[in-house]
Image 1 (spheres, rainbow, N blue to C red):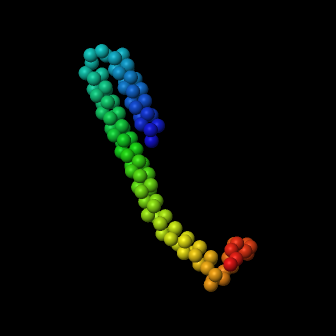
Image 2 (cartoon, helix red, strand yellow):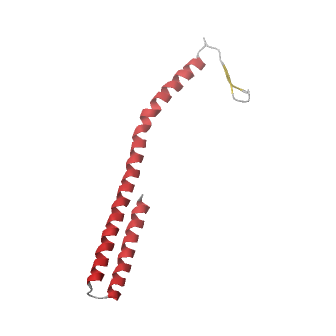
Image 3 (cartoon, rainbow, N blue to C red):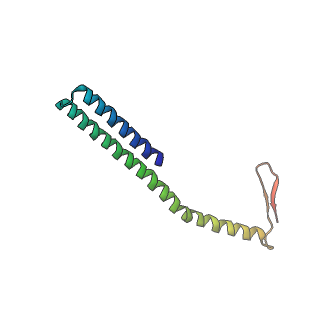
Length: 107
């Protein structure tokens, strides 16, 4: 995410310098040169706004996944504890095999 921000600012500065140089070479006080500079600044600001929105969505998505993690892990931990208690119980006999038929758990 930080790289995208740096790339965006680098692109902005590069394009502004190029457009400014072209406009100054074109005509020093020309109305057309000023309009080119204004249009390029507007386009660059729009690009940066879109870049910010994309970075924000990625960041928010990562935060949602991090916060949802404990809620989704809790039922799995409970199911694992129940399974372990059943397998370790003296009153319950079990044999578990893998896909090839090799015994993995024997109680």
